[in-house]
Amino acid sequence: MASKWVPVRDTILDALHIDVVTEEMKAGLTRWLLAEVLPAGKKAADDFCTQTKEQAKDESGWCKVRDMIVLPFLVQGGVWLIEQALSRTVTEE
Image (cartoon, rainbow, N blue to C red; front, side, top):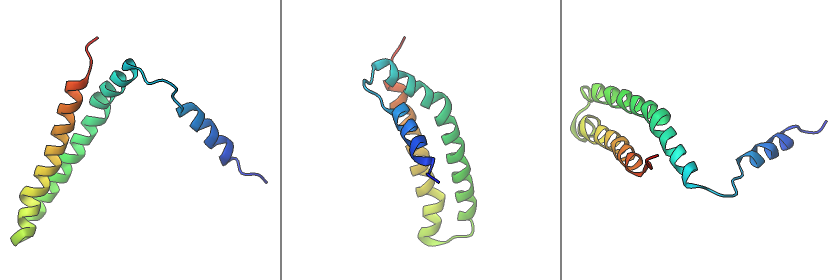
C-alpha cells in the first residue's frame, strides 16, 4: 500500500509556494500578527512571568535575580520590541 503522505505534502507545498511577495501581502501578514498572534503571545509571556516571579520567592542568590528580574525583563521586553517593530511597519491603507 503506497503512502498517502507524499501527495498531501506536495499539495501543501504547492499551496504555500509564493511567486511574488507584494506589499499588500506583507501588510496583511503584519496586521494579522498584531491582531491574532501577538495578543496570545502577550498572554503567554504574562503567564510565564507571573509564574517565574512566584517561583523566585523560593530561590536565592542569582537564581532569585534570574527569576525575579532577568527572565521577566527579557520576555516582556522581547514582546514589547516585537510589537513596536510590527506596529511601525504596518502600512496605512
